Image (cartoon, rainbow over all chains, first blue to last red; front, side, top):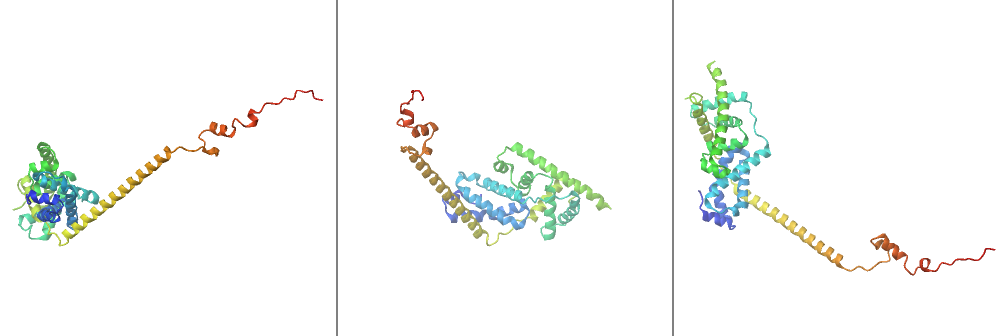
Length: 195
Length: 115
């Protein structure tokens, strides 16, 4: 945990400086998570502010320190859902459009230049966003929290309030769907590369 | 190394890793905190206004209820206006009191032979 519970208690008591400290401690992490969840860099700050706004007005409901981070993640996921619902702009990639993007991504990863070249990074982002289009919005977010944010099953259990087995099944199915989409793109590309 | 060769699971993991690198957390702008506090204050103000409006409405409703209760509990004087009576029978009784001559006066019959 990035802050101690004393700080949270002070923020609960209405101390603005304490709340500021909490925001500063978690801001970067939340911005990163939202950046991956909504895939629209121009709106990331707005959604992050909404998360902290909700945190501010619900902070008095928090009773124990250990639930703080899962709770903050839940607020983040909910704000991302709300944003996506509002925008209704989940990109519907046609699978035929993927092959070119996948090719670029593969080349970028193979050359180890993904993080160096912004253009290639963008292609990688688009490729993954397109692949994640194979699953529902809820499963996409769940998969991202697991695979990209690196959250453990225990942490996800606390965020989603569902048992580990149900979570595993959901994650497995979501990953299988993404894998299937990934393989179909790869298969289509093989003949193109050979030719 | 080509990411598309080898096990699909590993390739997908490699893709996710590349994605994680490609989507590093953006740096917050300098206006992040001021805008956040502005939003907090705006929400606080709107909540306060709503609460004040709700309180005013409750108070007004309570005052109206008390006023109506008092009005209903006061004994009302009978009015001569027929419209003030609640039933037709009451209005009729008021219009034709027991002293009204056409009801209580003895009937006079003229029994003499007509000439």
